[in-house]
Length: 130
Image (cartoon, rainbow, N blue to C red; front, side, top):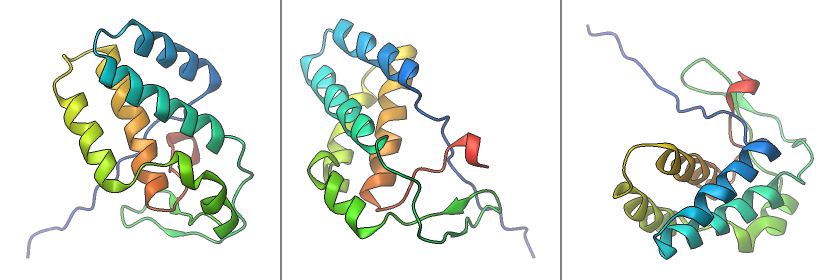
């Protein structure tokens, strides 16, 4: 029987300093669509950063690292308008796919990863929480 591996995608935390760096990258981007998506995602992360730690209990991540912690209903409601739907995340991902490898692309996908986690109504599992 083959060994089954369950992966996990855990991003670094988005510190205020990193968000400032990402704002500069977005503003320097020549693609207005990418710039707009990134600006929206940065606002989403800034809004989410005001969130207190969830009181909901978490469950172990299938990878064996970290915990999946659902957002509280009041938090889902508070950030609702800032979090893109999964389909919107897919559209953003397609726009980010054409970016050349480098800092801008990495920043865009880091922000998108947060959006996907929040769109799933769970706290992003960042490497500092493993």
